Amino acid sequence: MISTPTRFPDFFRLRQKFDAPRVEDIPSTVATSLTALRLDQRIEPGARVAITAGSRGIANMPAILKSIVAFFRELGAEPFIVPSMGSHGGGTAEGQLHVLHSYGITEEFCGCPILSSMETVVVCETEEGIPVHFDQNAFSADHVVVCNRVKPHTGFVGEIESGLMKMMLIGLGKRAGAQIYHQAIKDYSFGQIVRSVARHVLSQCRVLAGVAIVENGNEETALIEAVLPDRFEEREKELLRLAKQYMAKLPFDWADVLLVDEIGKNISGTGMDTNVIGRKYNDHVAREDETPKVRLIGIRNLSAATYGNALGIGLSEFCLRRVVEKMNAEVTAINSLTGGHPTGAMVPIQFETDRELLTAMLNNIGLLPPEKAGAIWIKNTLEVQEIACSAAYFEEAQKRPDLEVLSEPRPLPFGDDGMLPAYLDEAGF
Image (cartoon, helix red, strand yellow):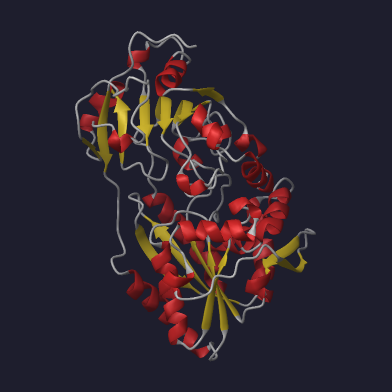
């Protein structure tokens, strides 16, 4: 179907060196941080404590939740976990429970019940006329502990993006809340909605504390910090700046072609992190002040843990046919419409083999000979410590102290079937 270029670029493997502080002892860190809040003075024996668990593949999340549960058990409380993930999991209670189980977040491991429901209580209405939805099980608890990773959001920019504040809205708001809040974003800024809704949640939903997580560029836990509700907003601003400092990125600020092994909701809310691929504001082009500037993106597969949710496929121009075959159109549509991002579910041009896919991409980058293209190959946008790059970057990579070149440029390892290895780390570079 597509003519083959004279030759593909040769690729070499490199490793990025990130600023990477790491929490070594999860249980001790969680217990020490929560103890510092003196919560023992506010917990009555037998008090029911709801703890949030989201839908992202956060490092050490099962261990962090288990440690929070153990802390409150020690105080004589009765903790339980509530799935807090908007419309993920197909927007069903069973689907959201399945998502948690796939991450290893189970009743047996965490040592407490997991109460999954899509039912919400409408607590009140904001000054903007927005109904405030809150998970029914969490609302019935004596206390709520909000646990989430603080990081740059994939669609919004501000002093507060993704973290404790967003979890109180989108996560605990379930599908009903997530849908109305994303609709409201068409009329109001994300910051205004977050502050307005959060103010009512904090005053009426018995939020006891938050447990904020920051990760380093190696996808490891860099910080765990318990925060009192009256400091959520102030502390989250500070932690967001830290998260941006630690966040992994592509090593170069341009690419003609970006090849992505997999996308998925466990990787990013948009399937692939727009902060990494440079498409936070527009699906198919970087804004003038945004990097990296990636001309074309090709997707090779869906992650197993996304369970057919292919949100983010619409941010690419090309994909393998198997991506669309694995896509659960209904689940993807529910998530994209709830999040107000219908274009994120649009299907790009499809090809049967990697050879055809890359040929089409390299034939659409302009007059530059295909073998000289700037091409980057990554597993996913969460794991970019070790990647493969075309020879166009080789000279620069050798001079950069933050990069370690692991191999010489060599031809892509296509099989007789026209396919590359399933994942970059199996390519033998």
